[in-house]
Image 1 (cartoon, rainbow, N blue to C red):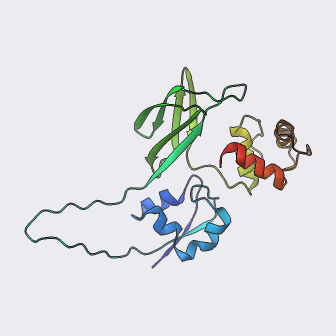
Image 2 (image 1 turned 60 degrees about the vertical axis):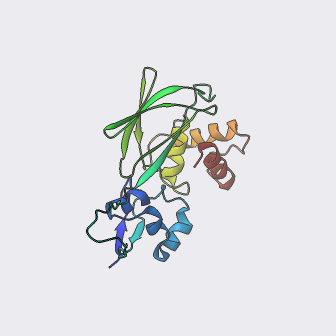
Length: 208
C-alpha cells in the first residue's frame, strides 16, 4: 500500500524516494502528489509537515538467457548541489578553486565565470562544508524552505548576506530591516514587507 510520508526538516523528494528504493520522478510524478507538486513546484524544496505519498513498488520483468550471469543495477538517488559564490561586494567569485565535502566524500571544484559550482551528491546527505581558501562554510543540504513560507524568505535573505535573523515573526525588526535593505538594493518599494514583487525578486536573485 502507498505510504503517507510526513516531511521532516532537510528531506527532499529524492531522499525520500531513495529510502524506499524508488526513483525521485516515480514519487514526484505520482498522481497522488499532484497537489503538492503544484503547490511547491520544486521537489528539492519541501516544508516540514508536507505529506509526500510514496507509491508501491512495481514489479518489473527482465529477460535473460539461462545458466548465464546477469547484472542488474539498483537505483541510488542523487541530487545536484548548486552553489553561487560572491565576494563581500556581491561580485561573483569566478574561477575560484574550492573543496566540497559531503558525507565521507570530497570534491575538488572550480567556480565558473558567474561564481557557480555544481556537484552531484547522494540523496539523503544533509550536512556538508565548502572550503574556500582559509574559510570553511558549513552547508545544510535540503534545508531550504519554500519561498511562500516565512522561513523560506528569511533563509534566502540570510544566504544572500542580509542578516535576517532566525525568528519566526515577519514583523521582527531584524527581519524587516533585512527586507528593506534588499528592497533598496533592487529598486523595489521599501516597506519591509515581502509582497509579491519582493518575493519574486528574492527568488530570482537567490536562484531558487
